[in-house]
Amino acid sequence: MKFSWRELPTPFFVLAPMEDVTDTVFRQIVAKHGAPDVYITEFTNTDALCSKGEENALQRLRFSEKERPIIAQIWGIHPKEYYEAAQKIVKLGFDGIDINMGCPQRDVIKNGACAALIKNHALTKEILGATRDGAEGLPLSVKTRIGYSKVETEDWIGFLLEQHLDALTIHARTVREMSAVPAHWGEVKTTVLLRDKKQVGTVIVGNGDVADKKDGRGKAAKTGADGIMIGRGIFHNLFAFREDSDVWHNLPLLEKLTILKQHVTLYKSTWGARKNFPVLKKFFKIYINGFENASAIRMQFMATSTPDEAIALADQLLA
Ligand SMILES: Cc1cc2nc3c(=O)[nH]c(=O)nc-3n(C[C@H](O)[C@H](O)[C@H](O)COP(=O)(O)O)c2cc1C
Image (cartoon, rainbow, N blue to C red; front, side):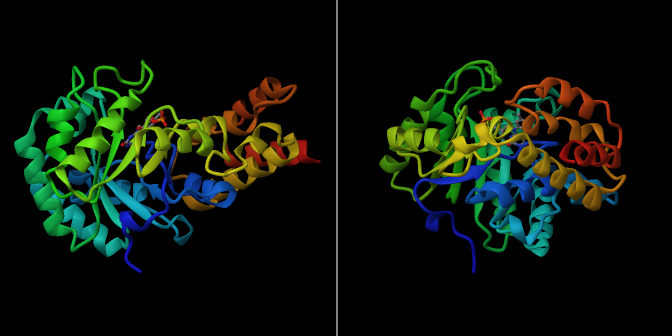
């Protein structure tokens, strides 16, 4: 059945796209232990996807059936490549396409991509048109921030609301603010009011500092957001998308170690030598946390240098 943002529960919950974090392996772990309603890939460059060396880009777009509905997130600068990327995404079997217009990394914005589009409405319009042409009816969404140097919700978000998007995720900070200040949830409410005033059907997703489902429900009730996206919250609570998310904090070490082992084992069978082992190390903190001796055990995991060593250590501790 075709995915529709409008047919999700209210509020619905989305696992945020996070580069080098939310690959197919971690999404499968989250799906197994507390699934969100929607998954999004790491951001994937349209030029890379349309080049001969597309393999790395395709790696970012790898997914399994356990991660449905799955949205491909893309970024770039050339409308033609957006069209071609959209065509590939259709063929790969994705449920939707999301365009990154919020990433503040210097190397991407210096070329006018991602958050730099906030200052370029004309190119944004072209990109959306080209992507829609290539998307063959797949839902089209944008993830962005509330302004560049200052809050520009009326101007920028107001403009996006006129682009017939199926969904719009608001990371409620400006580009300049990076992640250094608390998210301005009042601007999510402003977005919902603007959407209603303009009488458009775009589904609004609020994002920024949400700890778990309970916290998200409260923020959705206050702002009227249709959906809530959780990113870094998952680093502190793997059960963030479960109603009983607090269970995570008291989960015995042996159960956390079992999940860590599942993660490393799936990482090994999925990626083999194609990804660097250090990428995996950031996850150890998620699992080895919240009990006595956690930091000593974490240091043992940090000292491992292959998936096999990490699995052997987990086995030793589990025994
Ligand atoms: C490690 C990391 C990688 C990220 N990568 C992406 C990305 O690929 N695409 C994107 O739209 N946002 C990316 N983000 C931003 C998050 O999706 C999210 O908007 C941000 O972290 C705020 O939400 P949070 O407070 O729930 O974490 C990334 C954030 C982090 C921490």
